[in-house]
Image 1: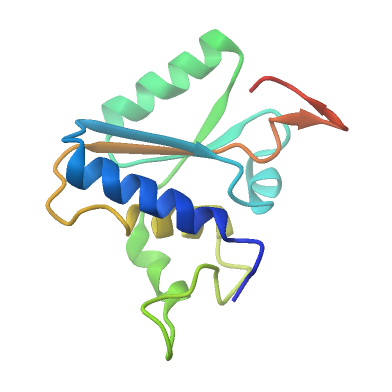
Image 2 (image 1 turned 60 degrees about the vertical axis):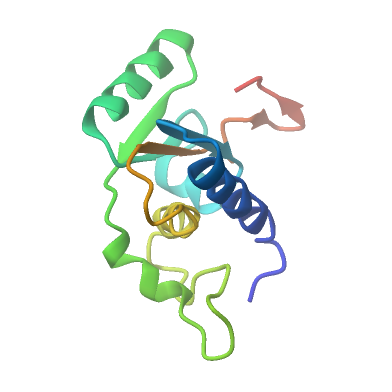
Length: 140
């Protein structure tokens, strides 16, 4: 339902492969996933969603040390997966309600592609705004 949200489908395939075929202990994905990231965490901070408290603390600290800062947000997929229900497909690739925390919804959509048997950790950074200032890339 959003032709600008095709990248999350490719990312979903990537994390499905990583959690099924690579025996990954940690999956860490970064993407310019949503414009809503800039509204939630601004120009200087990426939007971090993580399912492990220790990994989350390490990523926040690494961001501070490197200057590529992130703002940790709660991971509660049960609040967001309803947004992707569809009457004609397995799921939609974008939210039904744009007021329902789009960045967390998009991260939950990515996580929904994991192998159900995956036991490792996961972190996602939406970095749509920190990657540029005006027309210039920042190197984030």
